[in-house]
Structure formats: structure tokens, C-alpha cells
Image (tube, rainbow, N blue to C red; front, side, top):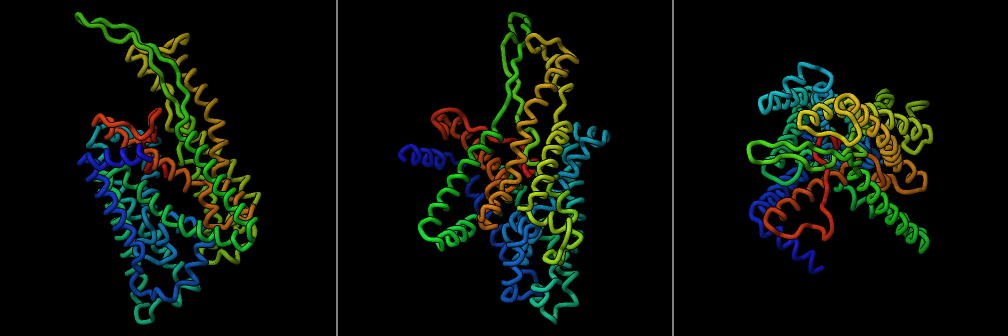
Length: 448
């Protein structure tokens, strides 16, 4: 405890770090206040029943989780940051697949600014489209009764404009956190939205198990222990790397010698991050969109894809996560480029010829470590379904795996890594006695 208190004192003693933490907390608080402001034209006292129904629904519950509860509350920030994430993912894929965009991205800061500007324009289009769909959802039973009759004629137009402005405001908050705060702004906003539901979910689960007496409390403690174990395993997945030894040839420039050192090329076990789970969920959402406003009466494949605890859903979902893991890894990981960079810097892998043999060797290692990583990622994705089948409440089961848990672990590790960097730069001890905190870089659009 004394070590922990001293660490907090060291963190607060660094002016720059303290200012970043204060700015981040202020911007996050602003976002949380916005999630409780109801859209114009809706009576907030008449949406309680519809709000609880949205939270308990599989598909809509996930939307609501990423929006921090704003989706079910019919808030001005109901769409949250997700339209921007969707636009960012699309632009990221396009920069990989379209050569012209690759050239623009390689232009440096000017190229990245162009890509970012196009992403913002695409965000407006995606938000307007999703806002129209959300208005259709608000006209379903439950929310329809809450719309004020005198405002009904203006409701569609004002809601689309308000939701679009709300998403752009959340995107601006994320950029400000990125520039003046601590951590990745977009990821921080997503994590805060997810964590906002954690206390209520724990209370509901505890209340449900308390009704069963002492045995129920024991089951609750076991569930918490399992959750901690899953988080520890997920940390291993996020930080796990396969180190390939690399030697650099000696070079003599003037009277100085360069190179000759032996280093390691770290290859992540889960290079794709959370993207395979996002892609799989997006594909699995498509059938449910057929009955988006009437999911309760859906039948057949729509009903299967809306039930995350369904055995067929989990099988199809697992296969898709594994497939997308290999696909996305192949898109973002280029062994040939790594081989050329090593050759250009006079580096080589012991026992492997430079050039194409090095690329083939790195590619074969990547294939070997991607398979177990993909399987574990698929297990993480379907873990909430298993939790529901074991009678865990739906709200609490979402924290046993899936996108939410993977994002939280990645964001926390990345933020702790930045804090530790500030401490070590000021000659303070790190956050841990042994080892360094290793977070993921690019947690935002690739974490989510």
C-alpha cells in the first residue's frame, strides 16, 4: 500500500502528467453528462419500459453498451463514437487495398491530414444514415408514445441533425483527449461507455444470486474469479509476442563502428487486435437488420443471429473470427516489407538468407502463432454466450469477453504504459517492480 501511495504521489508531482489527467477527466465528464441529455421532442419519463427492453436485447444491448447507455436513453449522443469508428475502419481498409490512398498516406503529415479529413466527411455521411435508422427505431412501440405530439412534425429532421452534431462533438472530444489529455481519445471514450454499465451489471448479478441464498453468493464469487482469470488470459494475449533473433552486420564509418548488435524482431500473437471480432459482429448483424425494429418477433436465422447464447451462433461466430483474424493479419502484416527493411539496415536472421527466404521464414512463423491467437480470440468472443447459458445475467455476461473486454484491457494497458513512460523519464520508479507495462499501440480504430 505504501508503494501504491508513493506511485500516486509521483504521478501527481509531474506537472505535465497531472494536467493531462485533469483534462482527460474533464472531457470524459463532459461526455458522460451529454449521454443523459434526452433528444428534443421526447418525454424522458415515458421511455423507462423501452429503455429496459433495449438493454436486454442482444443486438441493441451491444449498441447501447458502446454508447455508454445513451442509445437506450434516446440521448443526443445516442450514436456515440461508433459512426467515426466505422468510417475509420473503412478508410483503413481502403488505404491497404487502394494504391492511390497508400501513396497519399506515405506523404507524411500532409497525407495523414488528408486521410483524416476524408474520414471526417465519411463520418458525417455514416452518422446521417444511422441517425435515420435510429429515428425509425424511435417510432417503434415504447419510444413512439414518448414523442411529444406537438413536436412530431419536426422530429425526424431535428433528430437527424442533433444526432449528427452529437457524434461530431464526441469525435471532437476524442481528438482533444488525444492532443491535450492522456491516452487514445477514441478508445478512452469507448472504454468509459463500457465501464459506465459495469457497476449496475454487478449489482444486478449480485441481486439475482442473492435470491438463491448462500449458494448463490458462492456462485457470484466464482463468477468474479472466472472474470479475473479471463482478464489475465486476455492480457497475455494482448502482450504475447514471438521474438525472432536479428543480427546486424558491423559497419565502420570514419573512426566509429556501428551495428554488430543482436536484437529481436517482436511479432505479436494477436496482430489483428479487436478487428476480427468487429468484422464478425458486423456480418452477424446483417440478418438482424431485416427485423431491426421488431426483433422480438423475429424467426429463423434472424432469431439465431440475435441470440448470442445460441449454439449455432457461437459456432458460426467462432469460424468467422478465426477467418477474419487470418485475413486482417495478412492485410496489415507484410513479411516482404520487413525483409527489405532488414536488408536495407544490414540486418539478417541467423541461418536464413536475406531477401525472399527471410520473408518466407517470417511469414511461416506468423502463420504458426496466428492460429492459436485466432482460436483464443474466438473463445473470448463467444465467452459472453457461454456465460448466458450458465445463467449469468445478460448485462454482466458482456464483461466476460467479446469486444468490450478486449477494448478495456487494451486501453488500460496503453494508458498505463504512457503513465509509466512519464515516470521513468522523470527518474521515478515504474508502476511495477518487475518488468514494464506493455500496452498496444493504435488502440482506437484497431481496438475497436
